[in-house]
Image (cartoon, rainbow, N blue to C red):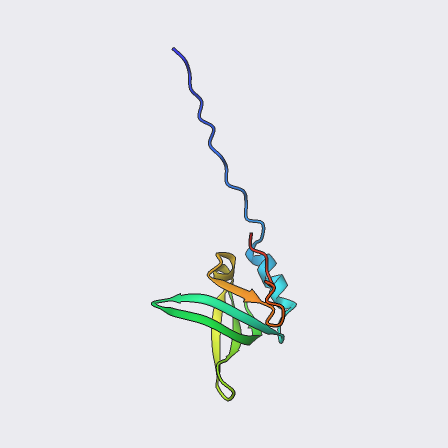
Length: 100
């Protein structure tokens, strides 16, 4: 009777970690960044803002909505890791982090 062996592919480990994201974002504190995200329930985020502070599991940003209106948001590093939030250079539209 023949024996069959199944070879299961092992997923590659992520190329970037949350620690890598924190380090990369620490280089951009105070700089303008374009935030793009799908917030669910037909709410999309596409705004330019500034990262104001970094913490252990999340970071804060001040987003510019209109000329005189600014909004403070907090984002988790895991949202960046999973691709739910994308961060771009607002002038060149090049991604700040390569999550591939």
